[in-house]
Image (tube, rainbow, N blue to C red):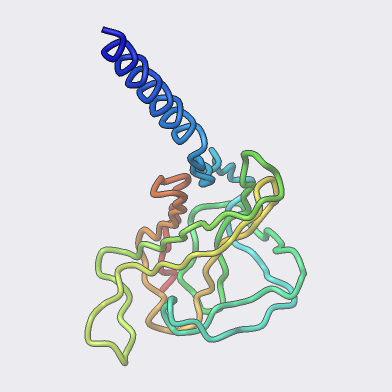
Length: 184
């Protein structure tokens, strides 16, 4: 009987040690350091036709025409607050927005999507119309930013509804539409 009691005590001690070790192992496992994405939103401050001081162009494969306007530090100047835009060469339209959320100052990747009128843009060197273009840019939470489009080529002067969407973590955070019209 004494042997059975000793075996039982031994098995109990082993089971207790194993359970304790399993609990420690569970507690010691590193927790995922991946934080959930910040809860952010966009507040459109002003929209319309702009003048962009001190800009240059840079090659960009993700926009129609292959060139992107890049600011050199000047702020865009609102010329007219509107969502109706004449489809004329050298007209710049867009909006100033504030990326709201926490923590302030942190840069987050925002996908910017341009949706073009139903017939699309028809560059002469393309067999297919362009219905949308997309790029991703890092914007700082809490700061003011500008997103816009400059009409430069004849084939970009397409009347109709132009929409800019901004997406964060697969969630639409703003949609702003402009209605381009022909003055001819």
